[in-house]
Length: 207
Image 1 (tube, rainbow, N blue to C red):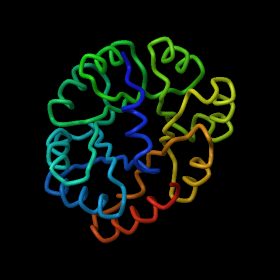
Image 2: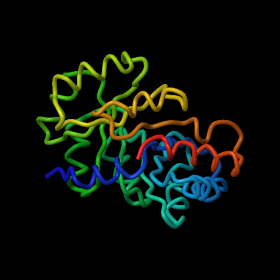
Image 3: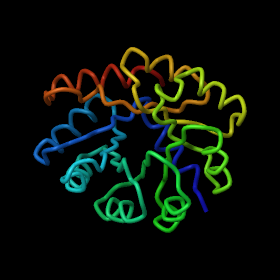
Image 4: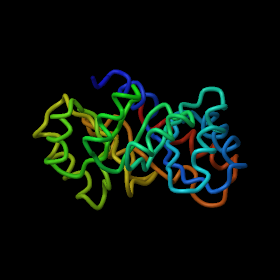
């Protein structure tokens, strides 16, 4: 059975969920520490680099950090991520296999959706929380407003893909949006002070 309350706890924790592509394990802990110090404690580590699972392990050691795995494409990815310490799972798309695996692992699962058909399949599987992805190229705010008007208040989203520091407040103003995913908080060469400052600004976007 899908536990929506657990996923709501993840999505409501911070207005911005940093989407992290980390190529060096040595940066994992200082990056997580800077983000948490700035007020962003829900961290999505994408499985796009060879060291991603090690990064999840290291970031999970930081007090206050809630670390999840992103770019999870199949049950094998999910299994490895959970074993590495991921406490929630984010996928760019929705498959029945991933939904079933999330129930078996008892882990909050945020699947990507791009249209009404995706959302309907998710609802059939007992899901009502989704990642609207890629948000901007899928029509942006007008598209999500249209989808939200069809499915009502029982469906909520984390919008990700092309969202910037400047556009995030407009997305967060939508009643259907619980949080947004963004890579701008850690963009560029890692600088702990800069990341903390960006995280502080992002954490204040919405209470």
